[in-house]
Length: 422
Image (cartoon, rainbow, N blue to C red; front, side, top):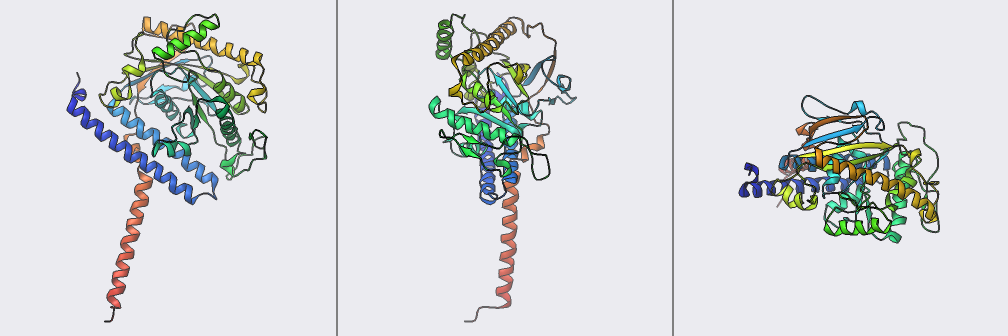
């Protein structure tokens, strides 16, 4: 047992980290609230500030996670499909630098509840952490965090498709419109709304200028919808068996509709789909990540993955079948289109399963593709970045205290000069 895992020290460390996170999250949410109240008439400024607070959040949680669970990030890149693969590098201090294209979707297998954090960290290494959107179950009712994530415009799912599809469609079309400079972030109004309440935005792309920015996106999506467990693995096996397919050993059968809708509605702006296969060091083939690397084990006991292993491939939108036109509603997609898309996605997932199986057996990725590998630290570019989540509110509070002090001084001096007559 390491020193940091000794019970009294672990509990003390967890308490300090929890308090720091709570204060940091409150600072971020408070700053968002102030900006929302003051900047309604300046949508571009408000959008830019909210986007900046996304980076503040990943800095806050990333730093605290690196303290409680320092680990390595090992990235293997398919050099043929991933653009700018030669620009993925690690500097002399262990910092990772990647070059992900803006306007991309990142998909991955789902093993632990902090998968999204490590992938968000990847976008941070590409200076795109302020452009992240995540599709996840509805967490909007969590105090403070829920408010912040709603401001981030994260895409919450209720897991009821009839309810989710309209909301998800509108959020995706809004992301697409902003990426073209013709969305609400630039104060553009919708053209119309269909009888199904689907919002329509102007077509085309704005000419870039000081007053009309385009707002890129990095959409993180886990097609499996949940983490691997006894229950979900059994359900996945039943599904693949019903299709006459062999069971998946290490991943779950992916759900089709969420990714299909995302690709369909973003296809006019999307640059890449990054397929990320994830294997955590220290996790045996028969173990479930949600148990071994639970939130309690990671943040209380300091027992997290020593290495996060990524294998990254990329797909061009033109190579993804059966998407149809952006304006087509998903309910209008034919059974054959959905079947063709699912066949494409299942092929990727079976390849992913084979990659993970080979990694568990040999300790490295078994592939005939041309690859290159980098290994760096899960850490901030500069530890001083930790002040960023706290700085806006600290500045506002300092200014208010200073103003209050001078006002009180002026009042006292005024009363001294003109004493109250009895």
